[in-house]
Length: 287
Image (cartoon, rainbow, N blue to C red; front, side, top):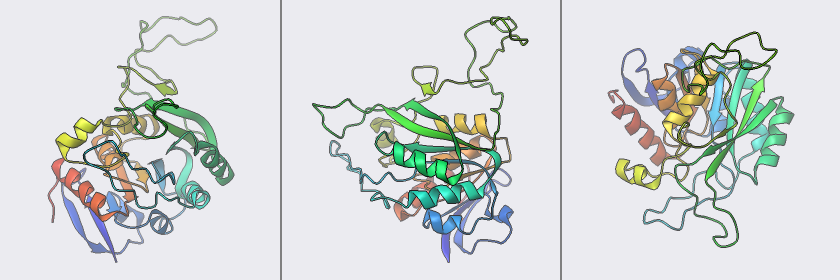
């Protein structure tokens, strides 16, 4: 029997929590977050079920910021996960012609890249997105400060990006700027850069002041707006977004704000309770 947060606010505005077994019908898993191990949940999900994977799995670095008055606990599973098995399960549950985003680190990237390729994914890019704060670990006098998140962008098959209204082109719409192209320029960007820096793009993470103001403390909390951009680029309203390492629930919130369904797991009971709190504050009712 597993704890879960059920949020069907896209239909009813209600959050339900209780001990339930996963239903045989995948529709009944929509808008659920389970307090359990990610791989254990994934094994209950049928092949080719989810439309998008967007997740930040543990890197195996046992991260703990030493330069803060509110020191984060080491994350559950941050001594490492069986990434090759995780990658295979991700490929299995993802539908054909779909996208997947995996947060990573520069020193973990080679291993993650090889595991994802071996699982069957086509690795298209490594995105680099500016953080909301500068990292404070490592050799403070002999290495560069980490001010960006890395994301491995993969495809299973091939899916083209959606046309969104997230970012306007700087050049005037309706003009033929490139010789050989038969289409005029569009008002909104249809192809984004792999590096998101500056005022035009949302930050990948929140800063420490945001965490203090909101009473949410997690070493790798992601910015809901940033995740919502990726979700809008790579999925359609009503589709299912999977995150097996929900953390404090940013992926679920981003999916809900953009009219998508979500499904995922968070093994830490404290962070699981934070997810419930954040979903409540977005308009649901706890039962």
